[in-house]
Amino acid sequence: MDSLTFDLARSSLRELNAFLHDRPTERGVNKVVVLHPDGAHNIAVGLDCPVEVEIVGHAGYYAGGMNKAARITVTGSAGTGVAENMMSGRVHVKGFASNGAGASMHGGLLVIDGDAGLRCGISLKGGDIVVGGSVGSFSAFMAQAGRMVICGDAGDALGDSLYEAVLYVKGRIKSLGADARIEPMSETDYATVAALLDAAGMRHDAGIQHDPRDFKRVASARSLYHWNADADQEY
Amino acid sequence: MCGIVGLLVKKPALRPRLGELMVPMLVGMTERGPDSAGLAVFTEPLADNERKISLYSGLTEEGADFNWLGLGHALKAHLGIAAQIQAQGNHAILTFGIAPEPVKRWIREHHPRLHILSTGRAIDLYKDIGTPAEVAARYGFDTLAGSHLVGHTRMATESAVTPDRAHPFTAGEDFCLVHNGSLSNPYGVRRMLEPHGIRFETDNDTEAACRFLEWRLREGDDLESALQKGFEALDGFYTFLMGTVDKLALIRDPFACKPAVVAETDDYVAIASEFRSLAHLPDIGHATVFEPAPEEMYVWTA
Image (cartoon, rainbow over all chains, first blue to last red; front, side, top):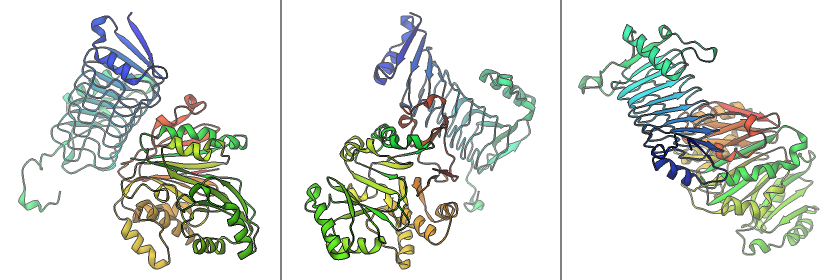
């Protein structure tokens, strides 16, 4: 029994998640396929073993949230908060992702082939996010560590109040948030973008070829790190 | 929370099935809105000189035993009109061949607790407290026919759980609005509208948005300009879905605080707060599914 299928049209989400929480890999189940997700919330949340999960269709809120070690694929789109608070492992959304994708992630890799909604990577604390499309406004707000690669455009206030996370954007940035600035790309940055695109399978994928040399680096100017009485609350 | 649903069928052959296709969408939004539900369905419009009004008797003493036949006789005696009455329990649709104002004035005077839900040539409106499944069964939502509809499941946050505070809200003729979210300046909007002679029926924040937009339309704005003024005047969290005689329109606040998903095929455009409500539509596997962007206007014509 290497692979197992759960049809959410027939079994409950609770059964699926209880099975996934019970360390299936230690019992020889390395892959779980989830049919008819039909937008259900909390699919494959809180996993803690290197199982592979394939969600065939559209997932609801918080899919793959708090993931540790598992490799989770959503073949359709994902609702609010996909992979929020992921610790390690990988979550791959083949469609689009709604608001708050990868919010508060600590580690692992989140790949979104399509667009991501608003607040993607908000409060990122580590790990990497690669978005094949564009991200909405307020993405990477207060992102503390980790990296984001955005192959499309970014909305308003990208990287507002950034700490040490670094963002790479290929397309147009509608506006930068307070304290975020565009910095020159170094050889290390080019290598980082190339490695992340490779990890996401996007460097030579589906006829679209992204060249690391087309990306801009956005990082913190660190002017908000210390209180500045002269700024008069104007940032 | 709250859930919104909208459905517009592109092929006339699907119009008789509008209600049947929509009920699972509405029931799918039960977790987002378990306390009340409602919907406005837009039918083939009546002739230019005819109007229909939807009435709710649940707030009267007689409730579901309201004497609709007696109402018809009284209207004939007082106003000399032969109104057609299609009644079901606490709900009735009154159709007549004169301007609606005298009829509505007479009803307000003689039956102050009879709630006028909607007025127009195409709109029929139903709303009540209860779970979406209960409300749908109470009014036979699955048998409704029409070109498009707007539905809502409510989890009340800004005003009490009563039938008149359920959505959709209407203003003027053939216009309705449902809302997921909460407005932060409804009283400012009301204070601005009241000097224009606009009357409010509840203390609900959504009613302010509904009357603001209908006021702009009545002042001559097209739907797009009215919505643009809505972005400027209305503050708070919202996904609004609106219905007019031949259109569905959707807007989301600039922060996209409240969700919406759209699925479109050659047969229909379906809108819901979450994909859960779209998952069971026919041919959904081949639908174009997308999330409407904040501060953009989406308008579909029936």
